[in-house]
Length: 91
Image 1: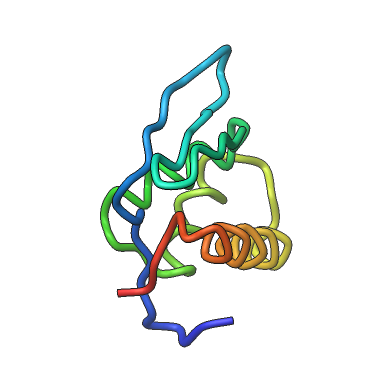
Image 2 (image 1 turned 90 degrees about the vertical axis):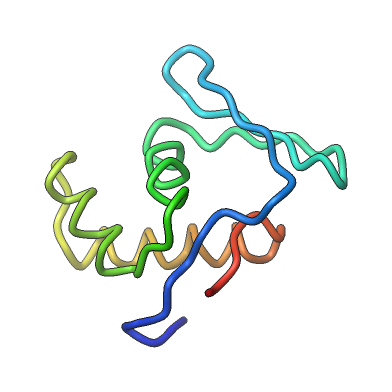
């Protein structure tokens, strides 16, 4: 997906809020709504500042019971989805 050092950050133009323990957001430009869930919401919060995949995985494996390999695959997949919707960008 990316080089080890590539960092990702939230794109401008989205509004996010917590709702019943999950993160929901809207892309202002398109009017599309997204439910990121609890863990997706945590990733979103971490992406307020530029983060590498490894930094995200390190934070998540410390907070949740998930193995490093599975977490890496899930984070890469999630970032790919966010990029396709222009919600995050590589910096």
